[in-house]
Image (cartoon, rainbow, N blue to C red):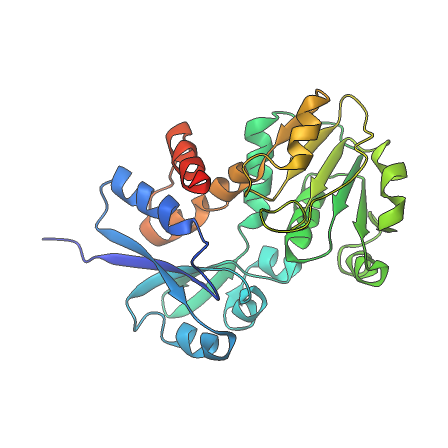
Length: 277
């Protein structure tokens, strides 16, 4: 008896930039599944209605991208991770209940584990740039690995202070002009802003770090950001944004289709080629 086709999608406004269909359909083909992954462009006004009819529209689950991640949290039963981060990017059904999680957390950690094994061993101080949803996922992830001190640097100091209220005293808010002084004592530097993205403003910082420091950038377009290029030129260890993009997709695929996929060099090359178009 032929298994019924299963479908998942990415919901965003816009959603045309998302590489999720490329990633998930690659895995679907690789594992020979009777499944499909699609894009759904849905405005903020229509998002709640779309989610309410997700199963009726033939979907077993979905990824959620901007600007819907906080709304997705409110429309589902979030796990502890999504609740703590305050945003959901993955939806799936258990029975008739729509559940949600935030896979940016495990994507961030898995990418560092793969690219810089042992990166968190004895890690005392990290500097995180940005105070948006991506930064919340990063801070939550670092706290899970027992990082003792996280300097949260943002142009809006008031917004940075909300992180201390949300995550506790290990998070220390800082102003943008304090960054250079903080970098000298950091063993991990994370860009969780959109600075450096193709078509946007560059991230111009004085990367004055210890030789043992690790630098990671959540931006994946361009493939090698100015931050990553500068870090590599100085001999620092790095983990780029494509790795996180790939690793954050793993759990959703497993939840929807029952197979835990591998992040391979072939898949990475496929995504890189698409980004270079």
